[in-house]
Length: 332
Ligand SMILES: C[S@@+](CC[C@H](N)C(=O)[O-])C[C@H]1O[C@@H](n2cnc3c(N)ncnc32)[C@H](O)[C@@H]1O
Image 1 (cartoon, protein in one colour):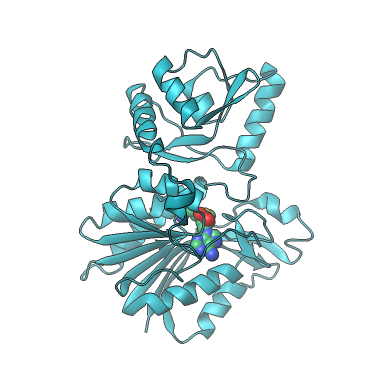
Image 2: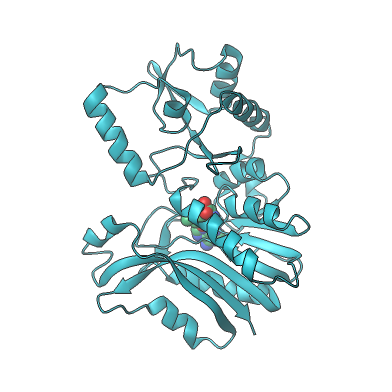
């Protein structure tokens, strides 16, 4: 399992969050919005394939557009005219662009949250191979859709007042929940302080706590805990590392969420579960065994995601597919 210091609630502020970076984020996002910048974030695997193809077709890659630079993480020439000079200097000063020989490499990406709405979201650059990469991708879009869907059918008569987005990363679930429930108090929790620096910019109305699971949460009893957890088996990246079969961390975090929910409170999740060759689902079986909650919803979102993982004899020897699911549990 990856190790990040996680028992220091203030680490986010002390270790990483240099407040000087926030005005630079603001200026960058405003400049991109003014150029009608749009970028829908693909999976890291698709990203890698596109970069390999473009390298084959175009030779060594240098960013020609803002999408190349802040979407595809293609370095820009140090002489680039893609950005106003002052902003370029601020981006270098804030280490959002770092010099590497005669190119500037981006350390963040900027993605659109919707095809129809404006709104840009900052997250980690590609490749996402570092253990503490700040995740955003197609699963995050699915997570938003699951939250919208659950919000429309669950707790319709008693809108939640206290909501927590666990495993928030750069804050997408917390941001989305704060829009779905504008009167609620929304808290975001993540173990990765680097992701929380971005979350504090992306979701300004939300309070964020750096914590391993819910160890550091001592606030009001919660009406809803939402979670898009890491769910890949035996992965070293903290955003992906779900445990030996991919579900162990999720089951632990659900147990912790249960302790912080009020009776009748709900756990909402978007996750993916390994399905055996005969259709067995050990994750669902584990949930069904526990009488502390009732399964209110367990439905397919996508029948087959990350198919490339199925090639791995070591991490997924007994798995036929990863099914993405939408889950709601009610604390009894
Ligand atoms: C798949 S990402 C989801 C990020 C975000 N919710 C989204 O949908 O884009 C999983 C997140 O869980 C966080 N995480 C992993 N282990 C954790 C733990 N023990 N406690 C809290 N957060 C954890 C990672 O840092 C990462 O940000």
